[in-house]
Amino acid sequence: MLKKLNLIFNKKLLESAIKNNVSAAIEEDLKNNDKTSDILPAKIKGIAKIKVKQNAILCGSPWVDYCFRRLDKKIQIKWHFNEGSSIKKGETICTIIGSYNQILKGERIAINFLQTLSGTATTSNLISLKIKKFKTKLFDTRKTIPGLRVAQKYAVQIGGAFNQRFGLYDQVLIKENHIKSVGSILAIISIAKENYSLSDIQIEVENLREFKEALDLGATNILLDNFTIEKLTKAVLINKNKAILEASGNIDINNIIEYAKTKVDRISMGVLTKNIVAIDFSMITEIK
Image (cartoon, rainbow, N blue to C red; front, side, top):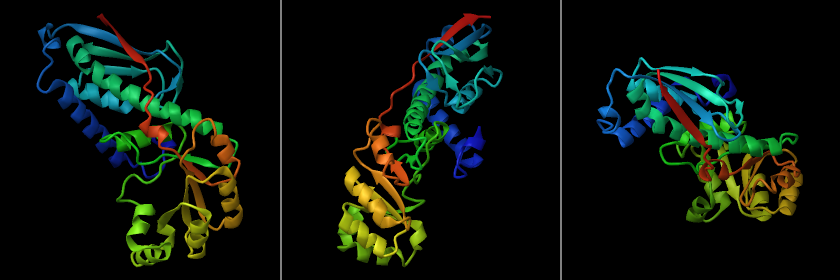
């Protein structure tokens, strides 16, 4: 599974996110007990199958594993598809065997992670395939569900797209409001260079004039915000591969091919993580 992921996804980061996400979800749903499932005799054993009700990219199995392991270490899960697999409507993606009431306790928590992360992965896959033949790469943004930043960015990669910075802590991105505070692109870049090299700085520009100024000042990573296709094409020609160029704003699945045709290096889209179209899963149980 991890071989598909960018190196920023080290094992420790991912394991920590899974543990924190699932622990918070269990606390939210169960507190100290499940008043309904707890009335069932503890000795009842069950078999459950999680099925998908639409075509999708499977994502979230590590969260499901940890969820049931937290509830009952004796529960066994057999996955019939690997993480990142294309799954078809009606297919059984995993079989769960163990304590019947513990399975019921974890049902909604597990499926919530599956439906959300598979939704993010499926959208990322669908849009990234649109521009597969172009040099342009698809990136996400920080527009994520609070508390699920790592999980959603993981899902973006499972779907075949790429990650922008994880947070404010790991990359300098100078935006309009930062520039406004000191008055000019020249001033903000001069200040940033006191602590960081130009290769560590991305700067957002609003028009071709600002773009040329940033390029002349040696910027190596420039975000072109809300550029029309015509202006983006001009920027790419002016750039001559000097800086990494990223387009963002007013780009969707219907027009992304036109933007990719400009040969811009990257396109970033908040829709990958903020407009969640959950995948429909269901669990079918029986007494063993």
